[in-house]
Image 1 (cartoon, helix red, strand yellow):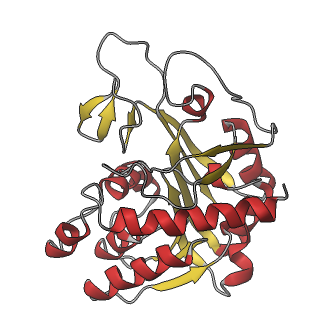
Image 2: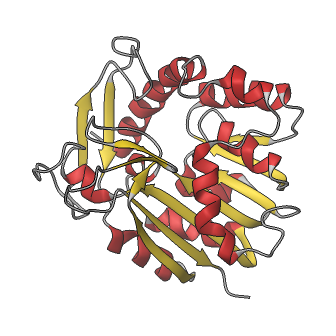
Length: 278
């Protein structure tokens, strides 16, 4: 199967997921809209990593692009924090329809762009002071070389980029520690599987387009792709928490979910902060 066919299948799958997620308790869109001070957990965790690389005012007054923005609650959260000229990019048109509805209900003017995040610089004819992507994003991209070059081109000189995502070691364990059952290293091609559910509650059987295609990207590929694109790495972190609960052994923590005391200490998230040189 070609990458284009795989991405088309993923688009259909995420179009289905968008409807399920928009009405889920996990995303709690009505609650999010009811409290204009609410910032999503994902963005709070992102900002904890990104803040040391921003001015004291954080993202306030800074232009911001959110790659793979899904239904937009995180994108709106960045706008609530004061980011300006906010844009969101996603492959799924139905996700963007929900995002536009949520932003409008929140009184936010956000520009939504449909397309492959790897080629966002061909879709948006401007630059940003901040570019972000996080939580379950790059496994849906066949390769990262174009992605990294696009991020470089979308950043203003001196602009900063953040990726924070599930650690690839969890993919190697199929999110069921502690046995390695799949590749950790990049380059093994697409992993294809069928799943009629999604990661929100009570979703089994609700997805019509069940085929998923994911691609493994180890940490060395992520970092090397950004370096080869001309960015400077300012931070690389391996983090002991997740924003969601992919397996029952995780217990609640301030950031979301963590392994219980006494279990082997492995990273659950990773984060990279990079900057385009002036």
